[in-house]
Amino acid sequence: MNKNPLVAFLLSFIPGLGHLYVGNNKRAFLYAVGFFGPLGLIGMFIIANPHNPGPEEILFTLLVIAILTAILNMADMIVNLLRQPPSYARHPEHSSVAGSPQAQSANQANNERFYTIILSLIPGLPHFQLGLMQRGLTFIVGFFGLLAMITFVSFVTREDGFFVFLFALPVIMFYGFFDAMQLLNRKQRGEAIVDRTIFEDLERNRETDRRSKAVALLLAVFPGAGHLYLGLQQRGLQLMAAFLLSLYLMDALRISIFLYLIPIIWFLSLFDAMQIVSKPEGEELKDVPFVKGLKNHQRWVGMTLVAIGAYYLFDSAILRLIQEAFPQWRVSYWFDRYAQVIIISVLFIAGGFKLMLGSRKNPVQAEGDTPQ
Image (tube, rainbow, N blue to C red; front, side, top):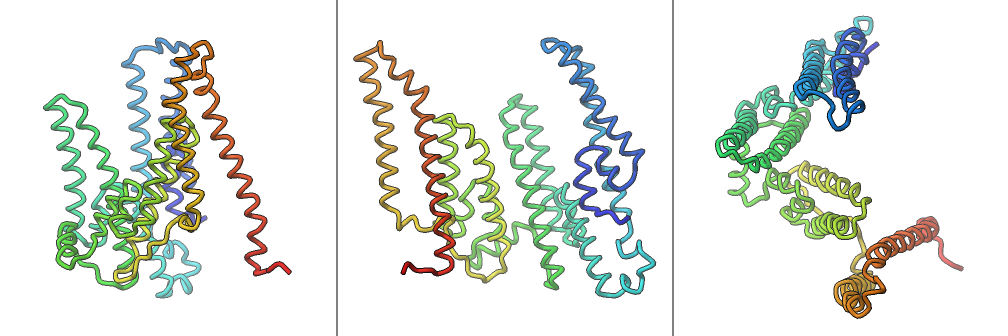
């Protein structure tokens, strides 16, 4: 049976599962035992004695064994997948069809895309595969150079705060993957790709007075910033406002639902910026807001702002005056405990009814029916 190499690679993030998918049952068993066995022992130690699970040396050794097994499992899968011949060469019984130039070209494109995805785990390697040595060196030097510099400075200064800059490493890795896939798509479309470093691209865009796609994608790490840089004011402001408002409401009102909403907004902004950046050069970028028609509902926006202002006026000024005048009433306690929950619940219920009533009218409007 022909197994999908991309599925096998993704399943390998769970040690043993990828090898089980491709039929290597012995390796799947060994990697699964080597990873989940030590973790299971650590869990047993913790359950048996939560306050003093056991010697730290033993727990640390078990954790190291599990991590090394996971790394070895992934490396073994990558090596096996890279050694596999192209998919059309594994079916000699269909050589008359699979050996055609069109089939070979399609399979070669799929295999090249698959290898690019796997090699993107180390920034720069997919560019080497595409023959872009200078661009690949830029990503490799930037990634490992930043890692070495942060580690060296942290150990020399004995300040752990420098490790916060390690968050830049996933950004470099993510952008390297996106850049490699974009160049691969251009190559498979028959376009010529030039081996230029990122800095040469930035200088070239500056000379031609164009917005840099690299800068836009890096700014897109903060929701809305990349869109604002590209001139998409309405789209960027809505994303940034939604993200910051969710952070504020989660902190001020202590509503856990925004903990799930924040990653959704972040990924939506990032992938939307990726789609905009990947458009062909010269194509006009249209500033289409996510939520349309806000200008037609200025009355509702104004009422919302008035309600928010009245709420904070009551919470920060009037409520304190009442509490100082009548301390036995415990008004602040009851308001903090129940008022915010009641207000948010009423808003959600009202919004739900609004959507339900609106959904009933949409089919009629879509058909173009008019009242008689």
